[in-house]
Length: 335
Ligand code: P6P
Image (cartoon, rainbow, N blue to C red):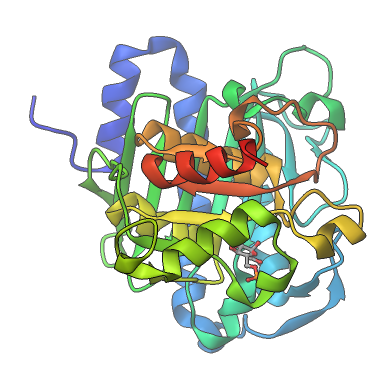
């Protein structure tokens, strides 16, 4: 048979090889429909009246954009009545979202950041949706605690990037595939069948505005990068920072790089362990990066091995090209 050409062909091919995954693959299709709706809204921007602040904060203490709330509602609408999910959890909701009694409860728990990088939305920058799927391990209605499973337990992870093109990138644990959204046909086309992170890179992504707050291993690494070819790393580096984890991780999946949102003194003063959230940012992106041959780490432990303790738990994030992530991890070890 010819290689799968659309998301539906790809999922059908996976089903033939994994007949027990029917409900999971149907859920991925539901998520894709939600992403299509968001891609259309993002593409219209002000013409759809979706820009600007919502005038309220989320559980993270962040000012919500209108589209943060719309995106969260779209995900709920596209998944809660399908009989595929037992519960939902989102960056935008304090606790998990129970499936209403009128709807059948499915096998899976869906965790998502409905609009990652939303501070970019009003300036037409890259944004995205990040999602993670795990199995609900009991027959009872889920509690927040049921979502607290390590990243190694994910059965699917992915994101949809809303940028010059909208792209859905997913893994089911056997590699990473990228699909470009054809807005005219309303279909995700398989354009990047086997995404791989190059082992070596000369591009780092970090918000350098916080450099005074970084810990010693990160300060050492970035200073070595900017020292260029006459420095200890013997090569010149470039820096990119998209302000959206989806934008940065997509670039790294395409051409390599190291993405860092490390623990810093500001966060420690606030009693936080990082900025990015484990369940719906670090874990799904970590599965994608590792499935593509990269490394996902906090600096002191592999991200996918962390046993979550809270729904909105934050962790330091260092992920991307193996050579550079391993180097930063070695600097943390030699502290
Ligand atoms: P800063 C977006 O708010 C986000 O959670 C990630 O998508 C992004 O990488 C990071 O925060 C940007 O953080 O501090 O540079 O605005």
